[in-house]
Length: 185
Image (cartoon, rainbow, N blue to C red; front, side, top):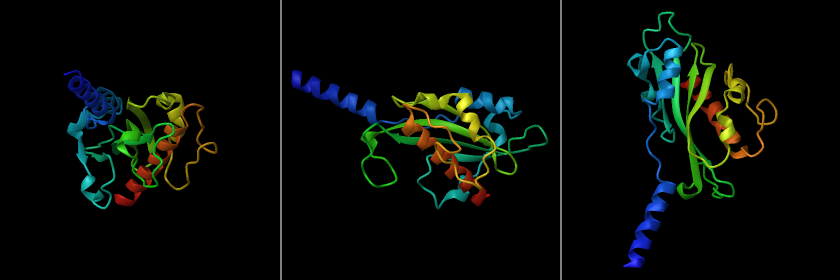
């Protein structure tokens, strides 16, 4: 009986550690960001993922702002998830981290009409370390990124001691999604 309880309890802990919920596209922080930009939630957005069929690895969605009649400088929105490795984890050579060894965070990027970064915010941070990347002051350094140049940690993106993995993960993802949007639409 005790072994069964221990086994079930262990299984629940394992599932809690590796299970990842879907991205909450209706998150209050996303809605507030849209509202600040003059966009009334997802009713004014149209998903443009149909153009991304060649990129099934994307854990998120791109949206285009509908009826953008000078109400907002935001023309495109990306809401996505970044899997980052735990310290000492993800020793595999593949692009996608192994679920047991990964953690994640969800974030959004607002782009203007020329597809440069207008605003970025991390709204759901589920990793154990690296929370410092959620600071608005640190995220401001991505504003204006157009995808023409490269983003490099400790060159044009500040590194954060204790958040190295998260810094590299979000830097890479912002660069990739900006370039992908520029090539897609």
